[in-house]
Amino acid sequence: MVAIGEKLDIFAPEARICMQCATCASRCPSLPHNSFNIRKMMRMMQLGMIDEIIRDGSLWSCALCLECCQYCPLGIKTSSIITALRKLAAQKGFMPKPAIYFTRNTLKHGRPLALPAEEMTSWSQGLNLPREGERIFYAGIYPIMDHAELMLRISLKMPEGRFRFLSRILIVLQRFGLDGLALKLGQKGKPGTVFRSSLVNAVKVLSRLKVDVAYLREEEPWCGIELHTYGLMDEFARHAAKVTRKLRDSGVKEIITTDILSAIAFRNFYPEVIDSFELSVVELEEKN
Image (cartoon, rainbow, N blue to C red; front, side, top):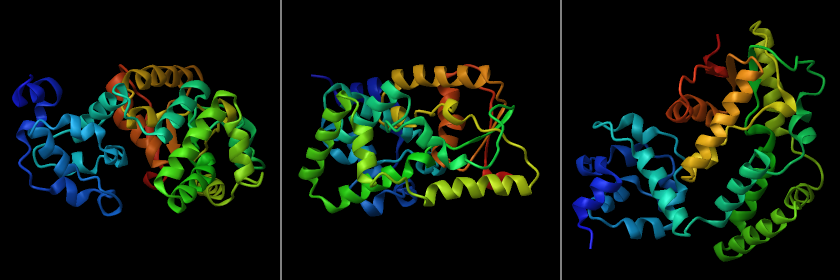
C-alpha cells in the first residue's frame, strides 16, 4: 500500500504546502453553482483521498479560469493539479459522457462540435475581411456558442440520468458523423444570432479603432482548450503543435479575440507545451 506522503510526492507535491486559507474557494466562479470546492479538494489530496476525488463528478465542474492560481498566496498551481487528476480519472474510465463527446470531436474534426465550416464562418459575410495577414481576428468559440448554449439549456431541464442518456445518443451519432445534423435540427436549421452578432460588432469596433485584421475563415484552427480542460495533456500538446504550425505557416504574428477561453489557452497553456510560442495574443478590451 502506498503511503499518503508518497502519493503526494508522486502525484502533486504542491498539495503538501496548502494551508487551507480558502482564498481559492472565495475566488472560484464555479463554487456557487455546483458541489465543486477547490479548497476541499486540496484537503482531500493531503489526506491521500485521490480515488475519491477522481470518482466525484464535481471534479469536471472546474472551468480552469485560473482565478485560484492567480490569487493563491503560496503560488500553488491548482490548475495543473486538476488537469492531472482529470487525466487520471479519464485513464480510470471516469470521464463524463459530454467530455468524451467534445474531446472526440476535437480529435476527429479539430473543433468540439462537428458543424460545417460554412456555418462556422457565415457571421463574417459582408465584412470583406482579408483571408490572410499578420494580425488576425480570432472568432474562437463564438460561432458554436448558440449550439453549446442549446445543449446547456437542455441539460438544465433534464434529470441528470436522462442527460447522460442524451450524451450517449450523441456519441453514437458521432460515430456515424450524424451528430452535427442533430445539432442543426435542434436549432431548427437556423443558427442563432446573439454570439455571431457580437463577432460582427467586435470587428466594427476594431475598424473604428483603425486596427486592420484578417480572418482565416474555414482555415482558422480551434485552440483545443477542452483537451487541456479535461486532462488529455498528450493530445492537447499534439493539437497545440498542429495549431501553432498552421498559424506560423499562415504568417500570423498577432491574434485579437473576444474569446477569453482561447486567450487563456494561447497565453497560458500553449507556452507550457510549445517551445518559443511567440504569437502575441490580445483581448479586444485591451486594444485602445
